[in-house]
Length: 131
Image 1 (cartoon, rainbow, N blue to C red):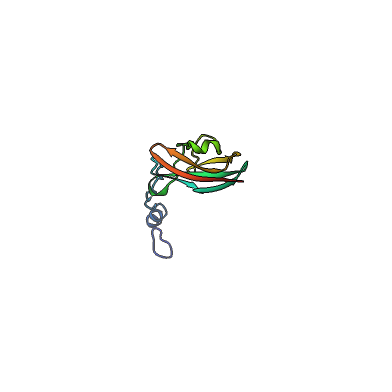
Image 2: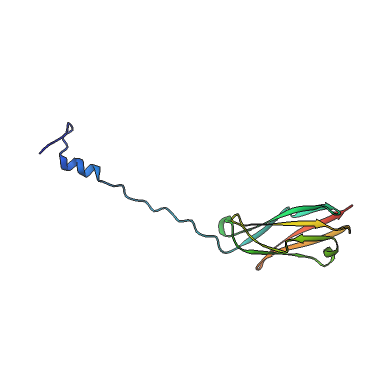
């Protein structure tokens, strides 16, 4: 039987070459399907008449994972409808769990509240319109 300089036989060398490492399981990422929190940034906004700004609504699940594909609906309180407009009125969250809305001030000054809802979850943005 042939041997190398270290005394390994041909059978020993083949065993070493073909010895595969034991595979380790890689945890598969879980989809974040169930929303547990909704937030809006900023939560307060001051706009001059005819101006606009962006609100980013974020929907997250367990452990803060982003929820994609949930429908977020915007609703302006009764008094605020004369003061602001929100577009779009509803939007699906993206891969980051975000839905972007634009709030535009009308000509009337005062306060308004916008409620953003995803199912039973909701968050509010307080808007003040000034001249």
